[in-house]
Length: 115
Length: 116
Image (cartoon, rainbow over all chains, first blue to last red; front, side, top):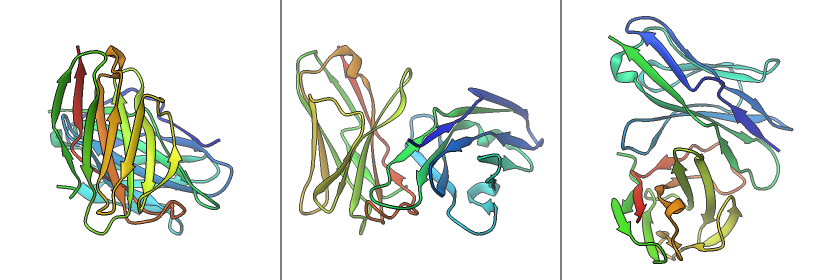
């Protein structure tokens, strides 16, 4: 069964500093990996995805994520955090091949950017 | 704006009652997903429809049911409501079919259900 883990409930970072939100996954085949962001009282918004190819994926709002197959990780990064980046971030995984592919979401990591 | 619409935005009802949540997917999307989000359970996948047919079930209770209509809008029916059903219910849609895992999902703003 596929699974995804976000080991940190909350990440605090000062404005202007780089940020990392961690995600590890487990699938039996090749993974499709996604990051979503949820602002208060809003639905989830798609940020970026890894399907195949370059391990460094660039997405919306200056975010990027690095796929690391050996460590089964897909950490979300941004070089310089903004206060407006404060939100709840979800990692999601989908197995890439065969039949129906359910998507599994992590429990979410709250990012707090401190002015 | 994701292009996915959900109504109503808020719903307050009593235990034992039945409610219907409505979702219209993005134009052209054939897949619709329903999720429940609560503080203690996180984001839970309930059910998926593709072009009118049920394709996958997640942690959906027997008291809950859904359908997707020919115009592709979907409804989630919740019956015999309990206090624990209070949550945010999200609908999402995607371009790909149930075997096209590469497509991201676009989420609606959600319906906040409060059961008193």
